[in-house]
Image (tube, rainbow, N blue to C red; front, side, top):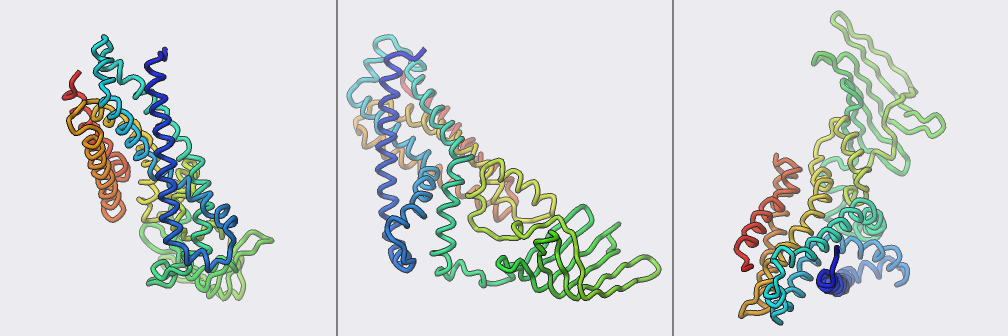
Length: 366
């Protein structure tokens, strides 16, 4: 049963979080708009269009990115003020146990954790779709570091269709749904027994098949090789034009069920470099847990009255938050660039800071 004490602390929790979130959002929008002023001017769009086509998606993106930090700072701020006014000492002196005092923090932490988990799985990806569409259309095209011509074959795809079929599509154009080169080969017992090449491949909307130009088929067995040439050939593959895309924002735009399904499909095709997507999928759950974890750390840390007051608590909180973010980034890089398992990469910061939370709880004066 939630009592007046719980409502008192929860009201402070929710109110402080709201103002903290609004304050940081205003700062983030101001900084982002100042950095992109020239890009906004080049688009020729009105202020209303920029807000509806970009900032409607940007604000939820910032909320999802900094949500654990918002919660942590809110807990540190209002709890340290309670400690400074000796409210916590008065509560404990009146017979309220330390664990009972922590109960509203547990409730609030769970509410915020569930909120982040639900919005991060379904709502924020939809907002990211708005933001990323604007970024791709108006901003990234003017950024030389994100040019599609920077090294290698950007629009080249090497995929596995099934357990023994592999295809390569070279220079795919999403506008015309065609590529300048194509090959497919089938392997059995580590031996190529079928090879198909074409000078051009194009998607046929009417028949839902791929049209190959100047196709050459090679069938190989132990005794002979048969070569067949066809000016035109129609091929039915389990690949659609919409699947042939390289999207830097893909992991942010997909909802959690869509992301899980996409990873499963791409793993079956033998695609490499999926750790980025896997880390994102696991982090959506790990991030929700980190909200609850940082809530408890903030309550235990700021609930102790010190001579430094709220300033000392806030300084310690910032150090802990920065350390948490650094651990999170390091583990992500090790997973994407190395062989660190994505599941551990997403959960390592939570595991380490869970130990810190237990230590602070044990050492807290009760």
